[in-house]
Image (cartoon, rainbow, N blue to C red; front, side):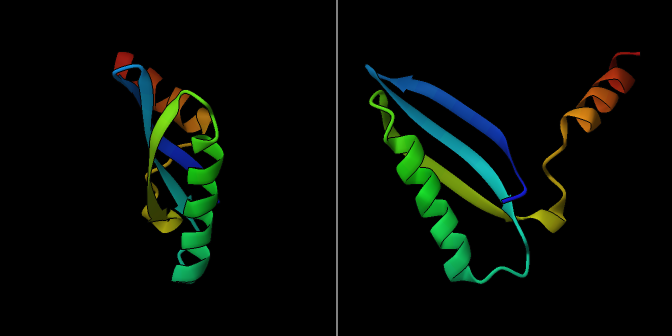
Amino acid sequence: MEGAHDVVAHYVGPEVDVSLHVEVEGEMTLHEAHDIESEIIETVGSIPEVDDVFVHVDPKELGEWKADDDVATTDAGRDG
């Protein structure tokens, strides 16, 4: 997995729903990507307060995820 972005957690009643996008190698098989998605759902879903977990898998080649340094540079350019 290359990174995660668009991570959102919100309350639905007393429980939390979590959604996120993860980036994987574009050459990965559907089975491999599905295994990563399932592992994320199981891991995040094991948190007692979490009710549902929604994972969207993107090929990393789309470039939607930005490293911290890229975000800082981009944000600075917008503010200045």
